[in-house]
Length: 252
Image 1: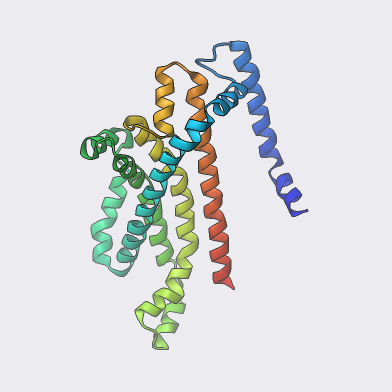
Image 2 (image 1 turned 180 degrees about the vertical axis):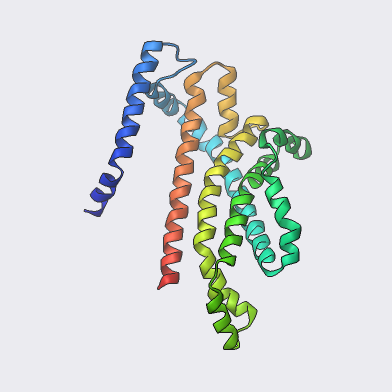
């Protein structure tokens, strides 16, 4: 019953998606130039045709970049947010650079990473870290600052140490903010990995899409893009599931 209610809740979005796909299918068949505008059915056929190389080689390579980039961003982003929360000097020193990192055009900086790291995985990971570091850091920092001052003062009067106040008040209070930033970061990580692979790689969904473009294979360009989109949605839902488990546990 709950599953039926869930599907009904998103019925308008599903209907809109089906209408867009139907319009796209009709338009592509009328235009009849699949190397420019492939139909959705043609893309799915191409995806099935290339499933072995896409799933066993390029999808795994892109997933590796995403997980490494996200992992590094979480470790350094949360650490920096905690440091800035603990020290105003650290906040004044690092926060302007965190903001400035997002003013740099990624598409212009990515070739520099290729020069520095070559065509190794680390040039793509660097792009992913740069694009995902900001939302995790800023959201966690805001969450730590939003912790109840009254509750912290109460624990101080009870003799709690700074570490105990952090563990019992600030850390749980920052969890919703952290996961909000992480949900933004996980979708951006897919874009970052694809950009890095597009500009310099020997495997990965971004690289495969670019290779198909040089062959004027429109369906071949779209097939890895579909996989990237599905991968982003799956990772988002996974983060949402972990968020529900941890935040519910904290509320209890």
